[in-house]
Amino acid sequence: MGLLLAAVLISCKTGRQYYVKEVVFPEGATPEQKLEMSTRVVPTKGQYHWQQLELTAFIHFGINTFTGREWGDGKEDPALFNPSELDCEQWVKTLKEGGFKMVIITAKHHDGFCLWPTKTTKHSVASSSWKNGEGDVVGDLRKACDKYGMKFGVYLSPWDRNAACYGDSPVYNRMFVAQLKELLGNYGQVDEVWFDGANGEGPNGKKQVYDWDLFNAVIDSLQPNAVKAITGNDIRWVGNERGLGRETEWSVTPYWASSYKEAAEENQRLGLKGTAKDLGSREKVWAASRLFWYPSEVDVSIRPGWFYHENQDTKVRSLSNLVNIYFQSVGYNSVLLLNVPPDRRGLIHEVDAARLKEFGEYISTVFADNKLPEGERPRTLKQGESAEYAVRSGAKVNVLLVGEDILKGQRVEEFTLEGLVDGNWQELAKGTTVGYKRLFRFPECQPEKIRLILNESRADMNIRIVGAYFAPELEMQRVVNQSTSELKKNWQVMAVDSETDGHQAKAAIDGNATTYWKSGNTGSKHQLDIDLGKSYPVAGFTYTPAAADEYAGTIFLYRVYTSQDGKNWILCETSGEFSNIKNNPIPQTIYFKTICPARYFRLESVREIDNRPFITVGELDVLIK
Picture 1 (cartoon, rainbow, N blue to C red):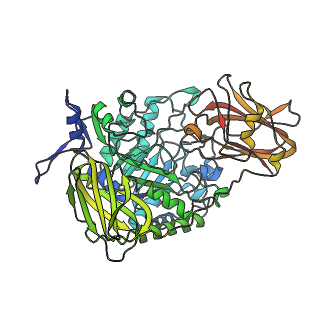
Picture 2 (cartoon, helix red, strand yellow; picture 1 turned 90 degrees about the vertical axis):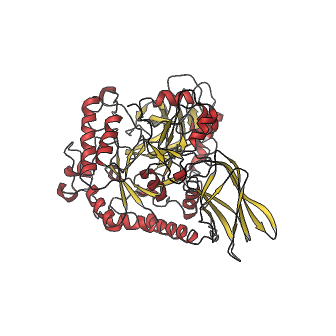
Picture 3 (tube, helix red, strand yellow; picture 1 turned 45 degrees about the vertical axis):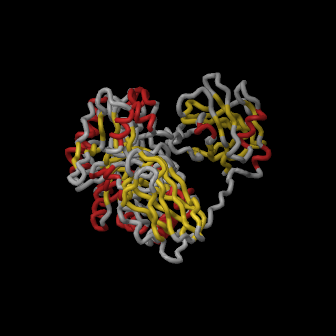
């Protein structure tokens, strides 16, 4: 699909032209002209309403909830899906208490299991034990959202590991469109359609080619007000699944959504990728042929995994951690998409629910009271100018908020916030981009005034809001290293590849995930053999990626062997895949289907996440029953 030139709006008051969602630069446009035009790119109505939500929720729920996996392989028996107390109203009420405005359900994950009674496959709730095959999770959630005033979105995985036609591109695309039409045509208003970029191989190694033009046309025809996220061209993935936004976050960017046919070529020409730190600098704008309003969504799970696992009940994020994520997502000109996975009962677990309530109460309390009486009065600043705001008498503050009127574009490149304390102006915060919302935390003070100084800007700054607030201090969660154990003191590295020695490889079993082993660059495979000192009933293992160099060397596909004598090795039955580890590089705990008595343990890499010729191991733990 070729891109259409964006619609142009004329402001009746100023006569100024605004480009909705995108602008194509005219032939021969100078860098100065491109930069000026960039200041007039604005969001669509749907994008603006989405940005105002600030907090949205993901519900990862499906067959994986009952198998304990993160990525299913599509071979699961649908009868396994049988939540005993499924209550979508409990989900929505719990999320609403947390301050969330929209919920997105994994209607179909990569395993192909559908949470609604689709006509396209038997791999769905209609073949499950739940409600004797008469249930509809999507329908139940839709009703709950209507009842409690929650916006509703759907995730439909393009990758389908169950569909036999996956890899036969035209046939599968027709099936996928049929699923889209069911979800978008039978469940009322859908506010967000979420597609990830997963595109694994189909049967016999066939590669599926998605028809994004067709998919987007179906969405636009059935749900014209829905925003299309991630591979869609309305909402952009921030580039990680750790809840971390960019301090410099441009919603106006030359980065192309992957669903455009020209995307790969243009992004490569511009040196852009979703994980890049710079997606909108002047240099990037000058090199571009067009710009998009393509804002950032930050997704992260409240637990280490995305689906519910009972052994993670004690690993739910602390309040302080969630608040930090809020300041680094919503506070970095993004929308937070927090995943909250229901358990096997079909309920949001009590621990998660309590944490969400704490979070909602904390955020609403902090931002309920702006200490600047004139802070929400619209103002305009030119570069080099400043705006002063009186602070309510005697008010203590430690949080500042700045927001641009993005309906008039995003323009600020650098600004400073100062406080008049005891008759002297002192710097409280300094930032680059603003966008819809930018938040800062700093030591508590009691200023008489707050001053916003516009240091650098691409055009006049249109101030929507400046706020000053007080956030009570939270106790930081102490992280305890769970890897250390008395048993590991007796472990020895037996063998590694020829380019590294066993001494250096001991970093993989030293109980410290900040140290790591990196293999050599040659050889078709890499492995790590461990002598446990004596025979144990081995139940599984945990692999922790090495955080250095953006997790380069992380294992994606693997094999595991055990042995009693170090000579005769038995292949253990596992999935052989660290699902989603590239986007979510957390410790991966794998349990064997049967207990393996063993003294020796071997982890063999089959494929690195980006097919690099080396691997890294931050920490390897063998689980003893």
